[in-house]
Image (cartoon, rainbow, N blue to C red; front, side, top):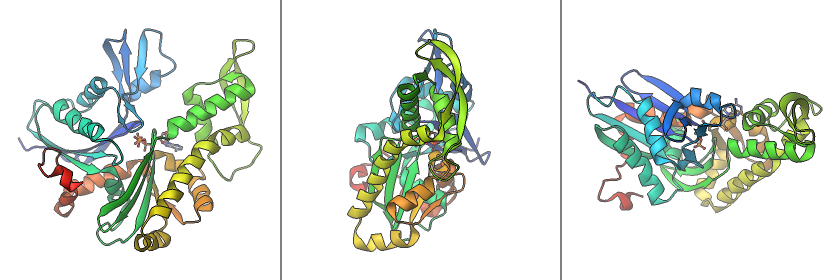
Length: 339
Ligand SMILES: Nc1ncnc2c1ncn2[C@@H]1O[C@H](COP(=O)(O)OP(=O)(O)OP(=O)(O)O)[C@@H](O)[C@H]1O
């Protein structure tokens, strides 16, 4: 049987898989629900639906934390269940996008995860996620002499400066959608004595965004009044949500600024011309590009379906031989030299 090739973008919030044989991209929440800490109850989107609603004996676990694998066994189970049907068939090839600014051990964990999840993996190749993102964005990575990609994801913000097909600078900031949501949740609790769930905080963040829009808008959400201790509905103002997002946003902007300052002058000229390319699901956040443009003074453009940029890049690499040299195996003797 002909072997299949998969492209894997294992995100903190969502797993995206490109299946070459079917020529389709699948996505599933990176979540697993365990019953009594031992038995898998559900995985992916259905497990995410249970978050904050499940009975006490069901624990909803997020196997990735800040862009790296935090619960190896859970992640392995999740990946196997997403790739089920393939284990018994022919030996498959895998191309995995990994963040650059992580330790060797964390990077190796991605490799081991895929190699041991799919029993018959013929090969597992790695590509830096910043590169996959740039290719998925549609950038001419071989000839472009300077570009900056900022991937705003669920648990991280990865900023990469690329030139002539390689990464010049990269930084993984451990702030993503979940930190914005926790910040909203905490501010609402302190200012209104009102406890909301993380999913409600996400809803508020998505609704209000970070820029534009009328300033006296509000959204009524359910939660628990901490003074009376009873469930209630309260209107949460846009001002409170925006105030909560200010601090994490500023950390990301500061990281972009400092990377830009460290960029070599010739590469900088390219960034001045092209501006910043925004990718990752959080790039959908209303007003984010305008906010970044105003605070960095650089032009900013958002990718189409920004959360799928990296996996689209994996697809392009898999389908085009010329991109293969951007990938490497962690088994290569000269792996360290390659970095
Ligand atoms: N339309 C939208 N508006 C606002 N936020 C959104 C929207 N769509 C997705 N998001 C947010 O994007 C984040 C997920 O993005 P993405 O799928 O790129 O993350 P990930 O790749 O799983 O995480 P990471 O890259 O940090 O490992 C979530 O926090 C989600 O709330």
